Each structure stands twice: as structure tokens, then as C-alpha cells.
Amino acid sequence: MIFDPTPLSADEEALREEVRTFLAETLPDGFRPGLGLGGRHDPEFTRALAERGWVGMAIPTAYGGAGASTVRRFVVIEELLAAGAPIAAHWIAERQSAPAFLRFGTEEQRQWFLPRIAAGECWFSLGMSEPDAGSDLASVRTTATPVEGGWRVSGTKVWTTNAHLNHFAAMLCRTTPQGEGDRHAGLSQLIVDLSADGVHVSPIPLIDGEEHVNEVVLDGVFVPDERVLGEVGQGWAQVTAELAHERSGPDRYLSILGLYRAFLDVHGRHPDAVTAAAVGRVGARLWTIRQLSLAVARSLDQGEAPAVEASLVKDIGTTFEQQVVETLRDAAGGEIDPGGPTMFDKLLAECVLNAPTWTLRGGTTEVLRGIAAKALTRGGR
Image 1 (cartoon, one colour):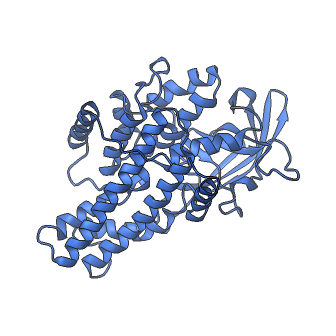
Image 2 (cartoon, rainbow, N blue to C red):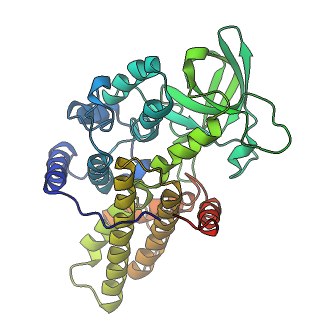
Image 3 (cartoon, helix red, strand yellow):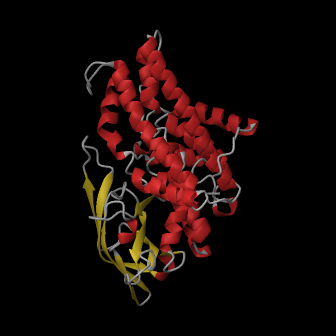
């Protein structure tokens, strides 16, 4: 396993202070922080970040990006998530789609998509999960049939974040029928224009009434050949590689930082022994998980593909987030009151409703532990 201690350089720490200053000047007084990657979809805020070179940071300068390291991006993202900033518009395009185009895309795709992503003008969703499949991603039933000049795509995707607002989705499709043996064979990724004929997007209201995720029905949607991402038939290997970016970042343990800070504002000034112990436990574990996540970012900069390490960070991080909600809820005492007078009251109610999803998105706990167990059985690295 690659979890080497990873301090930040003076230059990286200076960047952190620059982001903090920007956020202090930009976010309004009384701003209600979002829950990590569940922050609001705010194109204006995204464009303001892009003007500073903080969207698509790892995109090379030749394609309109900053050509920054994974760790410098980590520093910016960590501060944005810590503040609960409204980053949803560019989040998936920046985190996952841009690295996928750099690694698997054609030069034409890079020239077209990457400058738009870096400018904060091109927003992506991920089309992976499907109805009745649970966590079995390999059971993809969405099909892409070859036709003149491209493909006809039919099927249904679910839990597709912000598909009702975004421009494109990277859809995992079955391009050859599933045969005996390898269930991962015959899968490909196609870039679907979410405004195309035959795309039907229906928001799925969450328990708190918010509409972040969607059902996307694809009814014979035409996708031209130039919008195939990577090689036909290599979709499984590609999405597996992409998951190292999805699973290891600060979004997997910082959803609760706004709640933690709000708790300290209310209960942290003169804590009793029980409260002090709860605060200490949360802080110590938060810092430890952060070090693991930072180590993965460094290894990505060094050309590694730490899929197993990323799975472990995601498992530990999202489990931790759920535990923090209950720890602070118990330490605060009283009833949950979404209309309460403090920011802590409001965020606690929101977290209690949303926390069950945190160990599902990006791969369930059971799936992630299975990945880690297989690697350890093989002797790890």
C-alpha cells in the first residue's frame, strides 16, 4: 500500500491561504455551507473559480488549464469543501471527466472539451448506476448499437447527479452482448449530450426534498463515433482507473466539516468532559484520514494508479462521516430541529437525512472492502 507521509510545501500552503482569502471575500455573510460534494450548483461561482485557474487545475496549459499538480488541486478542493462552497456545477467535469480525457481521449476530444471544462463552461455527469443492479456495475444493460457514423444508445441510468442541469454525461454502455465468462468485457464509454433527442431526465427527490440526482432514460440516442471515450470494449478498465480520482479525494471525509465547525461554535467554548472527548476523537480521526487522502494525491502525481488505496480512503472516510453525525448528535443532546436558531441545528438535521447515502455513492462499503481484500490476498503492493 502507498500511504507515505506527505507534508505540504511552503508554496502549497501559500496557495491554501490564497483560497481562504478568496472564499472570505466571495461567500456572503451567513452563508450556509453545503455538505461536501452536495454543495449547490452555482455556475457564477464556478466561473469565478475558473478565472483564477482553480477549475480543471490539472489540465495542461496547452488545453487551457493551469497544468498544476494533483496535490495543488487537492489543496484548493480541500478549502472549497471545508467552506461548503457551491461547487456542484463543475465538480464531476473537473474531478473525473478531465483526467479521463487526458488519459483516454483523442486529441480532438481534448481540444474540444478540456478548454471548456477549465473555463467552467462545460459540466458533466456520470452514467454508471442502473436500475435493479445495486452495486453490481458490471451488470450494465444500457446498449450502444453501431450505426452509420456512430452509435444508438438505449437504456436507463439512475442516481445521475445533476443531469437535469449539466451538459454531458460519460455513459458506460454495453457495446457487445454479454457472453459467458468475463462480465467486464464488451463495455465502452460514450459521451452523451444531455440535450440530445431521445434523452429524458427525471429528477429523483431525496428525503429532504432536494433534487440532485436523476433517472436518465436513453431512447435511441445517437452518439457520433468521435464521442466514444477511449477504446471500444475497454470501458471497464477505464472506469476502474477513473475511480481512483473519485474515491480518494477530500470530498470523502469533509462533508461533515461544516457541521463540526458549527458544533464548536455552539458547544466548544466551554466543553464538559464528554464534549471535549467527542471533539478530540473527531479531530484526530479527521486529520488521520486527511493524511491518507493526501498520500494518494501525491502518488497520482508520481504516475501511480492507487485504486486500492483510494477504495480504502473512501471506505474509511465515508464511514467516519456517518459516525461523526451520530457523535455530535449525542454530544449536543436534545431533539433534532431543522428550524432551530443555530447553524448547527440546521446542518445536523440535513446531515441526519443525507448521511445514509454517503457510504453508497462512489461504491458501497462492501464493494470497497472486497477490492481491498482481493489486493491484500494477492500480497498488496
